[in-house]
Image (cartoon, rainbow, N blue to C red; front, side):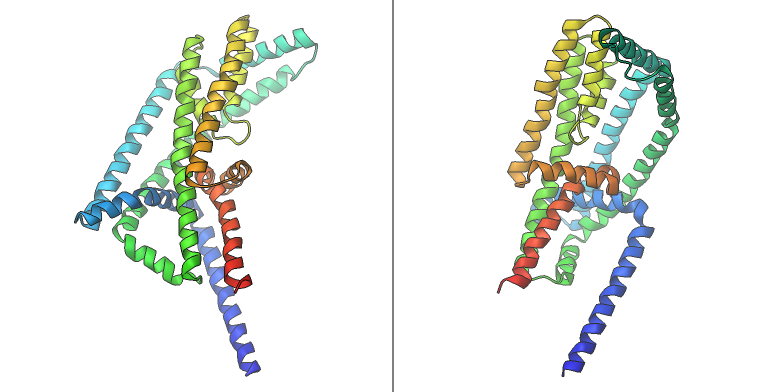
Amino acid sequence: MKGVELNQSIKQIGFVVILSFIFCVMIVELNYFISSLLGSFTLYMLLRKPMRKLEAKGWSTTAIAILFVTSVSLFAIMIGSAFAGTIYVELRGFHPQIIIDNVHQVREFILTKTGYDIVSKDVASETIITASRMLPEFFSITGNIATNALMMVFILFFMLQQSRAMEKGIEDHLPLSHDSIAILKHETKNMVVSNAIGVPVIMIGQALVAILGYWVLGIDNFLVWGALTGLCGLIPVIGSAVIWIPLAINLFVAGEMWQGILLLVYGILIISGVDYVIRMYFMEKYADVHPLITIFGVILGMNIFGFWGIIFGPLMISGFLILLKIYKNEFLES
């Protein structure tokens, strides 16, 4: 009997190794569309509850899928067009020399006040030239986002249309007990919803308050700087400060001391405060997540998944902790 059990265990381990190898090959070869899959999964988790309500009212799953996919597509097109149009209008007369001049002004200001040369002229100019060379790559990334968005909508349609069958198939193939699957579903839903709603709200909130502050203080191109402030608010730890601190320094260099001081105070109390308040609200409302998990999760996620790592990075770390809890329930406790 022991020999039979040993052979069975060896077969099982070999089968798991083969499955793992095939799975890894699939992930590597489909790496380009991972963000599409993650995005469609995120949208599915957000739309699942309203979908169930419409199903209860007698709607067909195909009609619901068409309605939701069409709505998501139109919303994305409107937001993308508005953002791209605003950036284009503000930047069409922009010249990189403006940035070089501002960097040199800041350098001269600090050198005069402190006697310390933070960076040489050659290094500053070379940095701006390098940044200018990155513009073609930026447009390439924009094209990739558009391609992945189309694939995301395509995947989302089939997820919605075959919602119940998909969920049942996943549950049937997970080697976990019913209680562990329930824990996994609950925690995953809370984390995805909290990040999927919280991240855009944080970005928009910071952008709006930044635009208002920049406009009041008379900063040129306040719409562009406000939009960039909202985007940079997603950067872990530093966040939006990478925008409003240089702008404040630029005001000091220009001799506008009070405006610079006001911008620093406004950035610390209002712009950064919006990030903290909204993030803590969504984290506490939907998922009890420690701030360090969010910070390191975003760093990890963006290295692996790109933009969607903002959502799935914290989910990945939290998921690891959930799996440890499930392992304890499944194997270490009777």
